[in-house]
Image 1: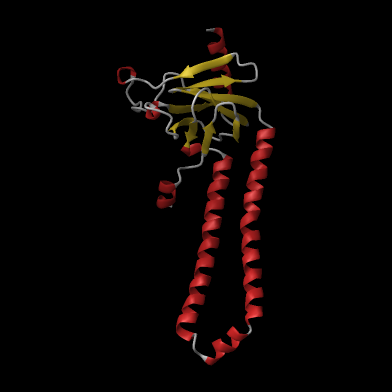
Image 2: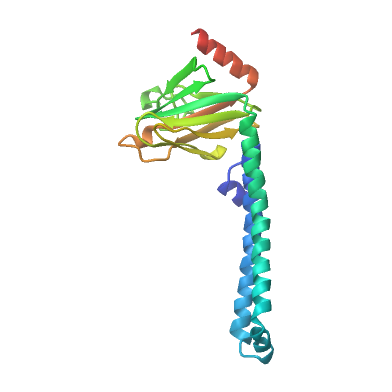
Length: 232
């Protein structure tokens, strides 16, 4: 359990939880297939010259049909959860209650909420002189992207210049920001908190100074924050 939490952080939304489950599911299937292949190789190595093995080897059509049937079953069993996860993500994006547009610049991020774009701001990395106690160097920003909890959020990502990458590992969010194109993803946060990320595309000399901070709060706090931001 400790090793699993170290490799994959605690899921922040149901989609991440499903990805963790499918990862473990695929790992068991691959391990089972590995042991089958290993047993076949061991049998060939130790019993390849025996009389019984030669009789089975002569009937190669039955072995070929059995292996094809086994491979098809493996593919069906592995493809099922993946198709279900793709359908789940598409259904969640279709029923999105909030739209967030992320624009990558050299070298900062811009956020626009809703279709009207009235609530928009730029997010720059904090300098060392502006950091408070408990904030992270090279990761905290002056304007955090605030999002509500338990809300289907559709995130669109684009760029105004070169190729960027909007990446928040703990939320399983990684989108390429391309000039003239929109990439989209949906998410629904099940718990509040701070989620950090960075641009994971080498976009220039200040590539490492494009941090991302998602602050997930309750719906009431988010409405109060958005209203106060609009009034100011």
